[in-house]
Length: 113
Length: 114
Image 1 (cartoon, chains in turn blue, yellow):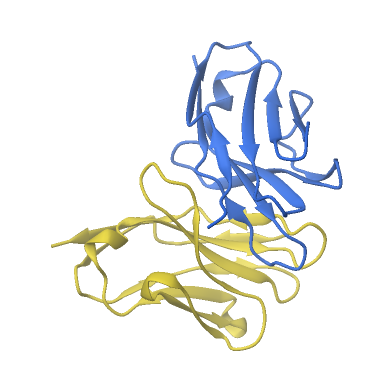
Image 2 (cartoon, one colour):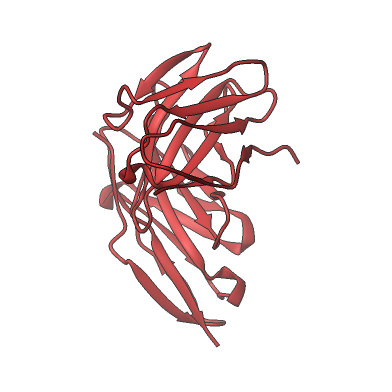
């Protein structure tokens, strides 16, 4: 069964460093999303991406964040200068046209120290 | 704006007993509604969804949910809980227009006692 794959599963980075979280969405999907879940809190929408551009973003998704689909299979989230409060589980999701549900990856746990 | 409330942070149920997890939503029209489950160290797995039609929807693992427009609710139920159902359960509402971002509730952690 096709699935969304995220790498790495856990990343530790120093404050101020850049980090790239990687996702391989399901191959024929057209809509891509990043969500995050700070420990003990709810899952929050960050950004949606369609047709090679951001379609919607939340107030969390400030200038420190960027997304990219560098090739036909990967979808990345970059945090330019990480802060302690960026520590969270980051989920990638994808959806196909005509589908109502998004499929989520296993998540990347980012720890900023 | 969309919002979801899950009033129960933790629920403990005995194995074999029935389960109901509450979810209330706020949305201007009939939304898309979802229940996701997150087992420890795992991602989010879709249990079931509602977007139109029959208000009682069946999902995987023996779960069902009922959409009640008058109460703005979408409660999740299971007639007999198994120990493997212990997990965190998230209700989410999706916009029916645009790019369908999801707004999640704060989650309910289900504990199953022997």
